[in-house]
Length: 258
Length: 255
Image (cartoon, rainbow over all chains, first blue to last red; front, side):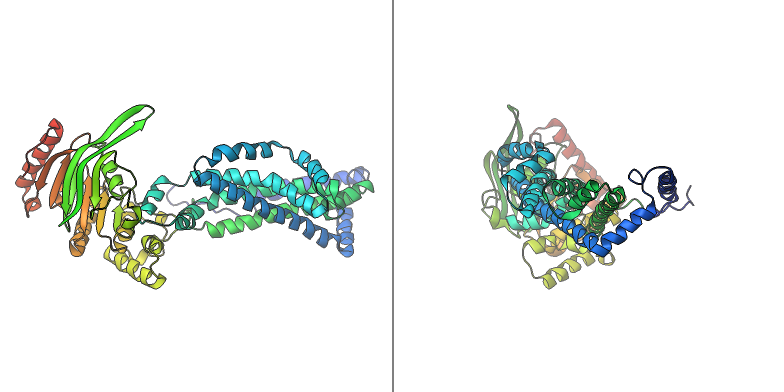
C-alpha cells in the first residue's frame, strides 16, 4: 500500500535469535545426559577458552592462521588477477593459459597439501604455495569474466577521447571489475579457511589446525570445539571485513530502498 | 573550408561467410562550423558511418577524413578533437555527475582544478549544478543525457557528433533538450553532425540535411532555409519530400 514504509533490514532479527537459541539450549540440555567427550557443556568450552587465552595460544595461533590465509590469498589474488587481465586483454592468450589454469584448479586441495609437503621444506613455504595454488585459478576466472564483461558501450565512449592503455585500465577496467573481485574474495575466504586448517593439521606445529589436532589426540572435545568456534568466528569476521570494504567501494550502486 | 570529407566510402561486414554491405559509395563534404543532420531508415548504416568517423571502425574502401586525416589510421591525432553524445547516456555508474563530466578532461590530462572548473561551467550550462555530487542512478533519463552533453562539450572538441541523442526520451523532454543543445551548438560554433531517424528532428536541428538510403549512400542533400521550422507548411512539404525519397530509395535532386 502507498502509505506503508519500506521494511528496514534489522541486523539482529528475532528469527535468528530463536534459531540459534533453540540449537544452543538443546545442546546444553543434551550435555547433561551425554559424556563430556561427546558433548561438553558451555561452561567446559568456556573454561577451555580461558585456558587457551592464559597460555597465549588463543591469540597467537589464531593470528598466525589468519596471517597465513591472508598472505596466501593476497599472493593468489595478485597472480590470478594478472592471469585474468592478460587473458582478458591480450588476444588469444586465453586459449593458451586457460587449459593450464583449469588443470591446476582440477587438482583437489587435499592432493595439493600432500604435493607441497613433498615438494617444499618449511611450513610457511608449503602453506603459501598451497594457498596460492588453490586460490589463484578462482581469481583468474573471476577477473577474466569481469574484464570480458566490461561494457562495449563504455569502452567506445572512452576510446573517443583517445586514452592510453594505462588510462583505459585505471579509469574503466579496474572500477568495472571491482564488484566481481569482491565476490571472488568472499567465496575464496571461506574455502581458504578450510584448506589452511587441513594444511596445519597435516604439516604444521603451530596454528589453529595444529591446536585442534593436539586437542583431538588428548581426547579433549571441549578443546576441539573451542578452536572450532575460533574458526567460525574468524571466517565470519573476514566476511564482515570484505562486506564493509564492499559497501564503501560500491556506495555508488543503487540499493532497493533508493 | 572543408572539415569532413567522405569519398566513395564503402563498408562491408562479414558475418559467418556472409557479407553485408552497410555503406555503399557514400559521398559528402561538411564545412567547418556547419551543423548537419543525417537522416535515414533504422539500420541504414548511419551508426557505422559514425563509428568510422570516430575511428572505431575501418572503412572497407574509400576515404572518410577529418582535417585530411582518417580517424582509424591516425587514431591518436584526434585526441581531444572529437566528442560524441550517444543514444544512451553511457555514464559511468561509479562516478558522480561532476566526475562523469570531467572524464574526457581527465583522459586529456587537464590539471584537476582546471578540469573541475570546465566541467562545472558545462554542468551549469545544462542546468545540473545542484546535482554535481549525485550518482547517475539518482537522475532521470533526461538529466543523465544532459550530463552526457556536458561531458561531450567539456573537452572543447572541434567536431561534435550525436547519435540519436534524444531518441529514447519522451517527446517533451526531448524537445527541451534539443532546444538547449541547439543553443549550445550555436554558441560554440562547433562543426556538428547529428544522426537521427526522426525527420522533424533533423529539420529542426540541421542547417543542412543529408538523406541516406539503405545501404548508406547519399539520396538527397538539402539546405534548410532559415525560418523553415517556424513555417509549418514549408516544413511539412520538405518532410514529405524526404519521406518520398527514402521510401523510393532513389536519388533525389540536389538543392
